[in-house]
Length: 400
Ligand code: HSE
Image (cartoon, rainbow, N blue to C red; front, side, top):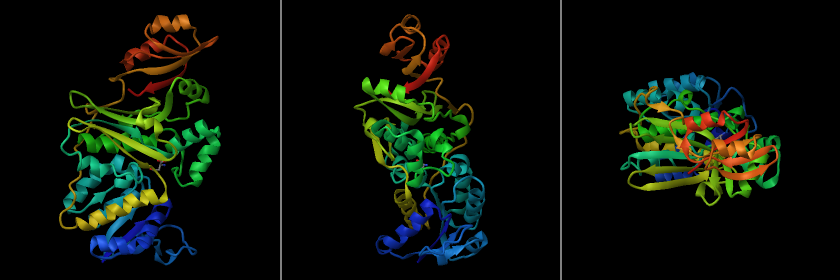
């Protein structure tokens, strides 16, 4: 029998307990042995929960119990979550997590410890919620040099954008709905301002390119600057606005990574991704482009990925899964400045000034006191210099 401890009985932790109970017989059949939830660690009590009797308040109970094989960390953040993960690995327990912040910042260190102890540290649920993406990226696409990975990596912001654009709901009301559904982070600014997507693109880049890319190296912009005026203009011209995380391998092996709202052409598969759904596109030098799609947040979808990792850890007790990446550094990762792309700009300047600065631009809307246009493809640094001469009210990247 495999014994599990869940640390953190929030949305995802509760989903893990629910799946272990609902699908227990199926999991036992697949694994060849039963999976028993032995402890739930939380600072709170849950007297009304069917799992209330499993609640403990002291991590020592878990780490000192030799019967616990797999620890699920769904606490979040990099404080106690890091300390408990480190100590659980040190004690020889496999650890499974949905904690993207911890994996993005401390993943390399924790994986090195897991390797030293010959145990598993698995984190499929940290990117894309219920979408299988990290394991396919490492295994099914292992024959490829990965050239680029990008996608909609935050369910909350995609949900908010969809509700605002399709149903005319205000930003605040849409955010409240996302919180009620259990999609948003405890502090939803991490969703709205792009930090959550930033952590996820870092994890994807770590695995895709084999070198550490840290959130502090990745410029991120969220959706708080996206106005309904811009959405209206671009939709009429056949574009959709999506918050994308993107990591591109450069010819010298370095990585350009960033998070920003993008214009996506309405027939692009990413444009059809709505509500809480996420989609990740991977471009490999052998396979071409592959897209992974599914629910990017929420209790059971995220817990589905966590429980699959529990099964995987149990199946790889003798021979751990080889996962890891090398150290990074400034020369390994830069922001988007080295990339060339088109951008959408809206300015209070007149058409004459716009056309003088950007001779081959595509005008989307022009009226007294406002011009909205798409620049030609150019290095972002050149574009920034040209745009400095204009009074820019809005800027969005264009996905090619
Ligand atoms: N807050 C995250 C999101 C949860 O909305 O995508 C899943 O990582």
